[in-house]
Image (cartoon, rainbow, N blue to C red; front, side):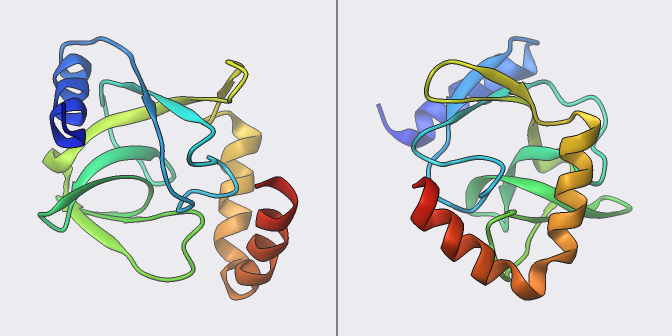
Length: 143
C-alpha cells in the first residue's frame, strides 16, 4: 500500500468521526512533534483556528501536518514549527483533520492544544529570528 492510499484512508475514517493515530515523518514540526518517533491523533475538523495543528492538502500537491498561522476568509496559511521559512497555502476545505494529541514512542499521549502548549507555540513563532540556533542544539541533544 502506498503512503497516499494510507493517508486517504485515514482521512476517510476521520471524516466519519473515527480518531486515527498517524505516524509523522520529518523535522518540520520540531520541537512540538518529533518525526519518526512520534505520531499524531487525528480527529474530525469542527472549526479551524489560528494556532491549530492540522493535516491539510497544501499547494495542490501534498499533505502536511503543520500549524495554522493565518486564516483570511477561505484561505489558510500554514507553517511547520520546525521550519525557518516557507509557508503553505490551502483552502478551508483542504484541511482534512485536526491534531488533538501527540503520542510519543512509549505510547504516552499528550494534548497539543492545552493552554501552555499553545502559549509555547506562540512564543516559538516570535523566536523565528533565532530558531535556527535553538533547533540546531535541540537536534543534537534530542534526536
